[in-house]
Every structure is written in structure tokens, then in C-alpha cells.
Image (cartoon, rainbow, N blue to C red; front, side, top):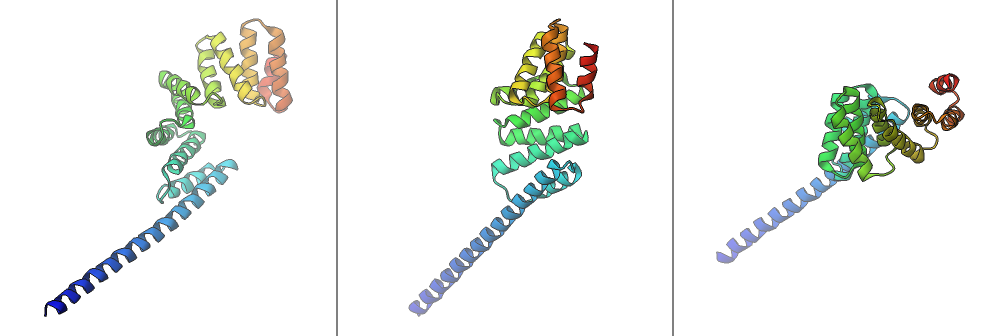
Length: 220
């Protein structure tokens, strides 16, 4: 009798163990499938954003965030969706996404740069300056952070500080016509006309359709 009971108990434990292992295997398989789908959706979002289809990009990124992603992937998807919202002019949504990205990874310079841009467009200048400065601290090659901080400083009449930022923006991307034009404007403010002309020349050279570059060069 006791042997029979032991056999029944052992069989029950064995069946439970098999069930647990089967459940774990099924969970792992579902997790892998979800991760693969999330990765695919994130890539589709990036491709859509690259071609300027930000509505599709936002849809794909939102779907990706419903899937199983690594922490680093999730933070980048939030940054990318936040950038798409910035392009759409939806700055509150952009701020929320970049804030979530910062929560997930406090060393993600792009999140601070993107949120700083959104704050700038909303007119929350002190918050913008703080985020853009943090982006630069984390990544000394953050071209957009230098450029946008330069815009703020130029608007404040801090032409020397603005010039330093636009210089850095050009260093990060020598083919940025916008940064070259703004640097030229700073040189004009300092009455350094030769360097201003060189910056405007550079802007229209790298971007022949840059109307502001031609206008500023004409005025000079």
C-alpha cells in the first residue's frame, strides 16, 4: 500500500514537473516570437521615418513597444518615436516619449537632445537649455544639441556663445547648411565679414537650394 502511494506521489510530482517545464518552454517560445516581432516592427518604423513617413513610423514604433524588447531597444524605440512626434509638431507627445527614454537610460544623449528640441519649440527655454546641455555633456558630437542651443543663445543676444555652439555644430557635421548659415549670422553680428561670407558660401555650396544662405550672402 505504501509503495503504491509513493508511486502515485512520484508520478504526480513527475507530471507536475513535466507540466512546469512544458509551460516554461512555451513561455520562452512566445517570448522569442514577441521579441522577433518587436525588432521587425522597430526596423519598419525606422525605415518609414527615414523616408519621411512619420505617421507610419509612429504606428510601427507603437506596435513594437507592445512586444518583448530588450531594455536598450525599448529606450531607443521611445527616442525614435519621440523624434517622429517632433517632426509632426506633436511636442507634448515627444516630451513624454523622450522622458520615458531617459527613465530607461539616463545616459542616452539623443533623448535629452530630442526633448530639448521639443521644449524649445514649446517656448520652455530654460528646460530646453538644460536638456541640450546635458545631451552635449553625454555626447560631445551631438550636432543637433549644439545647433539648437546656439539658436537659443543667438535669440538671447549671446552671439559669442552662439558662435561657439554653431562652430561645434559645423565640426560635428561640416555639411550642415543650417549651421553654416547661423554661424555666418553670428560672424556678421561680430562684424567679422570675411568669415561670415565664407560661412554663407559654404552653406550654398553644400545645399544649393538653401534660400536663407543666398539671402544672407546677398545682404552681406
